[in-house]
Image (cartoon, rainbow over all chains, first blue to last red; front, side):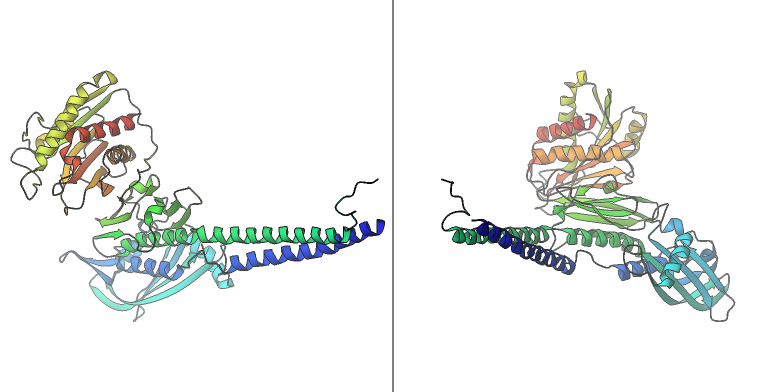
Length: 172
Length: 337
C-alpha cells in the first residue's frame, strides 16, 4: 500500500513539470499573438507633412497682397517671418509636448539667413534625444527635415531662396 | 476493514491513470478556454479602430487648418460605423471612446485658439463629423444619423427659479421663408403656429416660474423686420432665446439642426435637451446636429436657433404642432432641472 502511495506521489511530481511546460506554452502563444497584433498606426509622416503644409500654406508668414486680397503660399514675407508668433497660431496647448520645429529661411545670395523656432524649449530638449538616436518607444522622438524653394519678399526686394523646416515629433 | 478510496482500491493503478487522464483533460479544457477567451477578446477589441479614428480625426483638424481658404468637410467612414464611438475635442486632443466607456484614446492636434466645437464640451456620438473652417476659425459639429440615440448633453448647472424665455418665430407675413413645392406648407406659418401653441402651454406653467415673450405677434402670421426683433430681444430680460425655423432639403431628409453661439456651454445643453426630447417624440428623424454659429439672432448668452425638419418632407414634426411645441417645452424643462 505504501508503495502505491509513493508511486502516486512520484507520478504527481512527474506531472508538475508537464504542468509548468503547459503554462509556458500557453503564455508563449499569448505573447506571440499579442506581439503580432497591431493596435496602433504610425502617422508620424502624415503628421509631419500636415504640419509642414500648415506652415507653408497658412497665414503665418506667407505673403499677402493687399491689392489682390490674396495670400501667396510659397512666397515668404520676410517681415512677417521675423515677427510671427507660431506658438499661438499653431496651438498645441500651453505646454506643448508634441511638436517642435526650427524654420530657416535663406536666400541664394546670402543676404538673408534667418531662423525662427516653433516650441523652442521642446525642440532644443528633444533635438539632443534625436541626435542620440532615441527614436523608439514612448519616450523617443522622430525628426523630419523638409526644404522648399521659396520667393522672399523683403520690402521692395524679391529674392529667391529656401525654406528649411526641421520638425521633431514626440512618439505616441 | 479500511474503506477503499480512489487510490487504494484493488484496481488502484487503473484509478491512478484515470486521475491523471481527468487532470490532463481538465487542464486541456482550461487552456482551450483561456486561449479562446483571449482570441475572442482580441477579436472584439476595438483598440485599433479607436487608435485609427483618434489619429485620423486629429490629422483632419490639422489638415483643415492647413488648407488655404474656406473649407467644409463631412467626415464619415465606410467600414467603421462612427455611431459605435463617441468623439470629443478638448485641450488639443481628439478623443475617441466606445459606448461602454472603455479606455479613451487621444491624439494631439493643433488649433489656433479660435476653435469651437460642441464636442469640446463632452463626448458625443455622431454618424458624421462636420469640420467647417471660415475666417480662420474652425468649428466641429456632429451629425447624428439614423436612428439615432440621444445625445449626451454637457453637464452644466442651469437651474433657475425664474425661467424667462423669448421665442422668435422665424420669418412672418410677406417673408414666408421656405415654401414647399405644393405650396401647402410655408415656414413662417409653421413657426408661428408652433410658437402660438408653445405660448398657450406656457400660460399654464406660470406657477412653475415659466414666462415667455415673443419677437413677433404669434396670434396670427404677423410680420416684423429683423432690426425690430433684435430690439425686442435686446430689451428683454429673458434668460434664454429660441428662434424657430424650418429647414429645406431633399424629400427623404428630416433633420433637426440647432445653431448655437460659439463657446456657450449652456446653449449646447439647451439645444441638446430639445433635440433629445424631439428624438423621443418622433422616430422618423433622420439626423440631428448642433452647429456653432454667428447668426445675428443669437443675441442672448443662452440662444438656440432651431431648424425643425424639412419643408419639402411632409412629416409629423411640422404637422403636429402641439406635439412639437410640447417636445420643445420638455427639452426646456430638462434644461432647467
